[in-house]
Length: 373
Image (cartoon, rainbow, N blue to C red; front, side):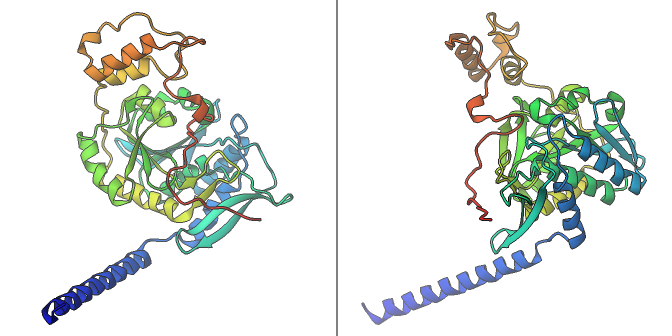
């Protein structure tokens, strides 16, 4: 190897070292400047997570919410289904934040919230039975959403919030969403998507908003900026009922809970805070305006008509507008017609991988976090 070649290698290696050093400095800068949750907010999150609640047994959570809203002096009502509706301020059209008050976990009055921490994830919250010292589902799905809605009520001047019961067994609470409450809602943001980087692009085959609409153009850059890159087609949560009933644009964003619907469920506090900061920015760009949801495509109507828990019989006749469907939609129709089943019509979603309500048993590619008591 000649001396010129050696010199070139030294220069290249030095450049690599300089590049790596700069990258390390930038990484440290970004990490240290990332917003973290204050102690006051962390204590509230722990408080919400410590409230036992279960589908059709939401009374403790509703009672807790009533106490908080009463102390704050917010205008709220609790309807005959135990749904809670809150209005703060005056606006022609309000931003509205959504969460559900039930979890899949049985009521456990011994539930205690345990805080741990690691270098990669920051503060981690999980549930433990204080008597048996065994893991007990913390119910971040959707107590994290409940917490975030309360924070939005405190932070924003003009805002609405709705807390629905019994989402986990088919959105029973939001099926009775109050039209009078939602008549002046411009758009809704729900916090009920798992982990820290996911959101629902669609629920039950229906897009929550149009990507190319004014709403979509405003929210998409911010959502990506906050690391939410997994835009998924999910089964259902309460935003599905809202787009069906009121046709305004909606979002369903990551709420920071992991391994949901299991005793080992946990919450990453940094992800919850990221969801909060994103929510504030979204309201900042969207304002107090109504954003209609774009008209559905034929393919979306096909999905909705022949899937989901509301369908009990296999369709036998083509839809009247079948010829307007694109090729993919026509192929889906043929799949339904040709599919053989001993039980008649099968739902679009595989319920072997679907354990009640919104949850699909797929925890993504995140490194597993284990708790040893």
